[in-house]
Image (cartoon, rainbow, N blue to C red; front, side, top):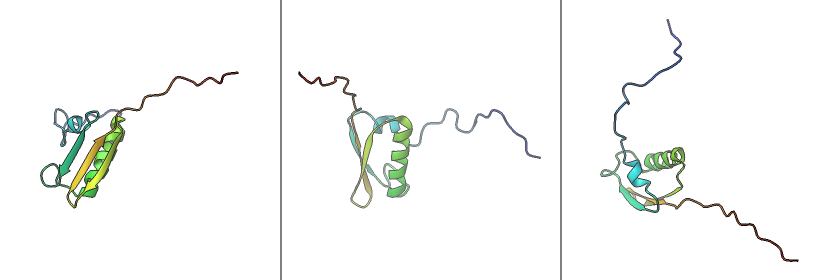
Length: 91
């Protein structure tokens, strides 16, 4: 019979390294060219989706561009700063 759990820690994922070096690829203001077969093994489209999803989870702004048939380029955009100065109209 099924049993309801109120807490669960996936023991299979503890202490494992991420498949991809996200911290390196998402370093601020860097550009990376990734090549299928060297940097990733899935389809270029699938990798594009994974990069966008992971960047979103991390709150990082990236642009991903297809480069040729088997390459992607990740452009890490600098964090946007809020403009807190308000312009004042002179009377």
